[in-house]
Image (cartoon, rainbow over all chains, first blue to last red; front, side, top):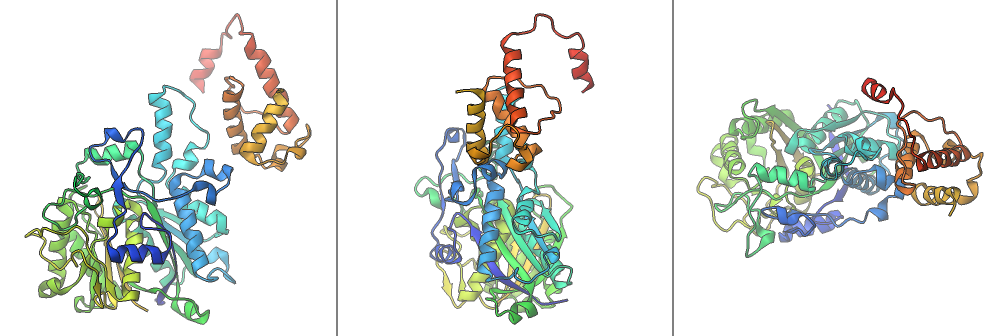
Length: 409
Length: 95
């Protein structure tokens, strides 16, 4: 197996568009969650989201704007930024040995929502001829490939909230085994259409608004947590063999050294502490390290009642007595739950945390839950605490648990 | 505005076609209008010209073909047929 370096990062997120901006917001705990205002938001119990400031016309011509759903637009722009950031990773590569590995949970849901509005609400049969191409799950990855003429594998992973953890892990495998020479990997999500927001609401997974401070409505690991807040955006990393990265003098953000993938196969929605723990153990085994070598964790940390207890219990079972001494960060409190892009933005935040040697804060954690009794780096970033090896956890409805093991460069 | 003028405006705005390239013999594929583009164009014609276009494969190769087709449809649909074709229902079911 080859060592695999992360040599480019591209972001389109509620926290900002550059690694610097995003990391500064994460350190300061500045939440991008806010009340949303729109024609139909009155129909939402808690009209909250973490939205991306994005001017479509700045990035795409009129024809592309009609063909690319917001989810594909985010993905393409994030990929452009990652490739630009890599300082020429594609130069002199055989493009048939470059792959795209993208996670998305809901794909072009806003376009589908719009089509269904035409069909059902307007009782019209005038469905746009572009709707399939906007809505299909593999469109975002395909557009990244088309724009850059990448003719290697082009794969889309849809395992709900672990989609991009899986995408990055599967990309790592391909690079590590020499199947591709470069992977464009990450996730994209744009789920803020009324139809999908109402569906999430119906499941009772969404946080109720914190009346005093709406931006603090998502409170991972807190006793008064009430759920997650949906977010949108994309995060892309470039993975290339370490020797190639060193040879071209690339900026190396860190190294991906392992990947654990397990499936609960028990309940479609309820998280399993056992399943989560088995994914962390599989990740450690894949990286060839012991639990003692893990310095900190970017938690899945959704702020739902069920996840945070299960994840705490899973971490306890893997790390034993040391569990309470490991800094654990849950950044969904400020960037929201990006669903199929969550694992990717959290992987990036973990890499940046180690690079800057700062454990990121879990915001809005005022009241501790007796069942969540670990060190969540409550509310204040901690200098010097991220360490050199981090886990990034992504768990999902459907039971797909993906854990990435990252090492600082 | 004539049909031609209106279609030119649509091609320029929605497909970024250079207006001086729009001669009657200009081939759609040379103008960057592929089969998906043509499907979009026909969809937009329905709004622009208040038409209901038949869902049948079309052999429209040039800009002139498109203008002629739209003019024919405008003419046909401005005087509704007095007798519906007997096979219309059957044809729909089969499709």
